[in-house]
Amino acid sequence: MASETQRDYLKHERATDAFARFCQVEIPTALPALIGKSAISAYFDSAAESEANVRCRGWTYVSAFTLAAIALFLTLHLDLSFLAIAPALSAGMLLGRTRRIGLRTNEPRIELLIAEVSQDERDSIPNLDEFCRRAASGRFGIIERHPDGSLHPFSDDLLKCFSADGGKLLVLSDQPEDWRRGIRHRPVPRGEVLTDVRSAVAAN
Image (cartoon, rainbow, N blue to C red; front, side):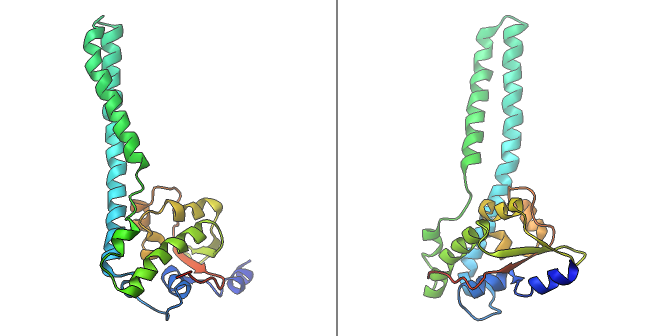
């Protein structure tokens, strides 16, 4: 299996280089030269916001269920149902807020990202979105190099990280810690992500 793996995966390269190849620019090309420093900062900020939203949702659920329990206790044990109205309404409002937080994508709007960048960067930012959509759909060959050096194809479950990755961190970062913090989907890759774009090129 090892020799077959090494032979079949020769065309796979770091996600950054694969993205540069997809954009038809010289390899290696630093990410800031591809999409601009401001865009990279915006994607990382969105990932940080996503992480904060997850923590906020957790505390909001705890608060909502605590209030609901208080309302139930007042109704069943003290026959004070009129006092249960306030905590019950508060619990409902908190659950509604939690649902709104859960529906946020935390992904920077492309039209805002391209407002103050060069023409080349303006083309590459939508290309990053297209790159991740193709990766999530399985149209690229994607493997993971584990810390022990072994190579493993991405499972269908791991491919979902590209569609769940609002911060595009699988391309912008090679640090699994960033992926664990910024990608809501589980599992996330444990090692280096290598990609073969299979001669695909961006539309722009």
